[in-house]
Amino acid sequence: MLEYLDIHSFLERNTHFKAESRTNILHLLGVNKDAYFFLRLLHIYAPHDGFRFRFIDDDLDSKASILDYFQTLGPCEKFLSWLEVKYVGWTKPIGKASFETSEFSQGMFVLCSDARRHQYAEILRNVGISHAKIFTWREYLVFRHFGNDDVYIPRIDFTVTYDCTLTCSYCNMFVPDAKVAQIRNTRTCEDFENFLAALEGNKIRVGILHFVGGEPFLNRDLPKLIQLAIHSDRFDLIWCTTNGTLVRDLLPSVTKSELNRVNIFITDYSEALPAVAQKTEKVISFQRSRISNGLIVSREKEWQDFGHPKQVYETDTLKRSDHFKRCTAPYRGFRDGRLYYCNLSLAAIETGLAEEQVADSICIDNVSPAELLAYDLGMLGLASPELCGSCSGCNTGKGVTVSPSDQGIRERKNEFRSFP
Image (tube, rainbow, N blue to C red; front, side, top):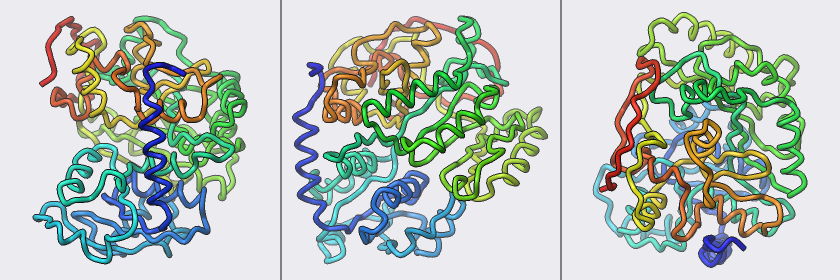
C-alpha cells in the first residue's frame, strides 16, 4: 500500500454510506450540469432502483423548470419518474427547523456541484446535518459501486493532442509551452487501445470519458477514438470539448442510440475573439445538425487562471495539503497505466514544465480497489500533487480572470509566496 493514502478515511466513509443508503431518498444540492450527469450515470447503473430525488436550489424551484434545464443537456425521459422538488433557497436564511421536517428526516444529501461543494457542505453542517449523511456526487457513485466486480471511477479526461488553433497565454493546459517543448502532439488509436487494455485488465469502469486538448478536433483519429469508446463496455458516457474553431464530423457512423451517450461541448469565445465568431457559428450549426440533444454551448469571454508550474506559491507541506483539500477540480488524467489526480498536473509533466512526484499519479496495476478509489477521491493524507504548490485555481483565493484574447507565451516568474 502507498504509505500516504488514507485508507482508514475511505473505509470509514464507505461504512457511513452503507448505513445511510438503506433508503433511496436523495436530497440533491444544486441544479446544474453535475446534477444532470449524476442522474444519467446513476440511471445507467441502477435503472430499476426506484429513487426519489428532492432538489434544493436557489433558482430552479419547480419540476418543470428543472426538466426544461435538463433537456438542454441531453435525454432525461428515463429518470423523470424519480424527480421531486423541495425548494429551499440558499440565499435566504435557513433555519435548522427546515431540515427537521419529515421531508429531510430520511435520506442522504448529495452535493451536485464540484465548484460549490465546500460551500454546500458547510451550510448543511451549520444546520445540524451529520457529515455521515453528506456525500459528493463522485463519492456517492464510487461507494454505490464499491464491492462489485468493476472498480468505478466517475470521470477521466483523455488528452488527445496539445496542438491547438489558439495560443492562449494563460492556457490551463499549457499549450504554448507544449509548442515550445515540441512534444508529441497527438494520441493515436494504438495509444487509446492501450488505455482500454489497461482499464479492462484492471476491471475499471469509467462513468465519463472526456476527450480534451489542446483542440481535440486537430487529432485526425478523433472520430475513430470516439467509435472505440462507444463500442467499449468501459465507459458509460463520452464527452468531447472543442473551442469552436473547426468543423469536424466526429460521429459519421454513430447510431441514434449511441448518440444518447455522447455530449459535445463547444466553448464559444466569440465575444473575446471576434475573429473566430463566424467560424464558431458554423461549428455550432453543424454540430447541432449531428447531435441536437447532447450539444452544450458555453459562451465565455474569460476564465480563471490556474497558475503556472514555474510560479510556486507554497512549499510548506501542511499548507500545500490544506490547499489540496480545498481543491474542487473534477478532471483526472491517464497515461502509461497511471491515473493522475489532476489532468493539469499531467499536462505540466508532459510539456516539460514539472518533474513527476510520488503523489501526482498512481499505477493502476497491483493496487487494491480501495487504494485506487481512495486516490481518486483525494484521500491522500498530507500528500498532494506537485502542481498544488503552483495552482491558483478553485478555492485558493489567488486566481485572476484572464481572456483568450491574450495570445502568446505568458510571462514566467519564479516567485515564492504563501497562500492566505
